[in-house]
Length: 262
Image (tube, rainbow, N blue to C red; front, side, top):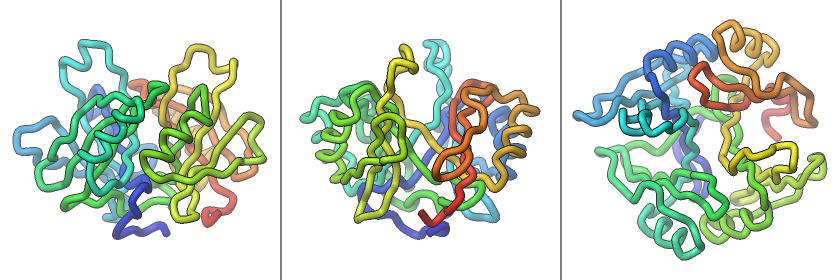
């Protein structure tokens, strides 16, 4: 379902980048993915814009506050889950042992958001739609296709998120380490990977995958644009992928899917 007009409750509906320098990040991603950019009127709020492909929105980008930058906050890609009430989800999350990083707030007429830090420390956004329901394009080249939690205790994470969002889970037999596929209404929407000792002290975090038509060409262009390499391209049962970061340090994954419908 590349073109979307709505999302089920519990599905990922949006991702955005919290950058140090919006203009520099905009140039990097537009060059890398061929995205177009639109800067929003935030009515005096922090700078925020949208990337699109052929007029279909794919994700957003904002610039973090001077206070956050001074405090050492790194650039990061955020994942948002579609919910019917951010207030109810935030309240339930606290009951399940999470912390509320950003309490429920209204974002002009676009909708309402909240940020939650799960018991293992990973941060995830919740989005209650107003005029903005989420990305109009996903699971197509140049757009988001997967969201993945990297955590030290996959079973504990599944228990938390299953209670919070009603997610269901299925073991991935192809993964060398424990991997749970996240499902909503029998549709795979993301995954939970249990980090092993090779991850060292990397904290639990949510990551974003972008679908590309030619990963080796995209990876080469990423390097030319001064992006950083985390894991160079390698083959998986689902396609060839790589883990990279932009010049400001925000990490994300690239994947050339063998079967986009799977």
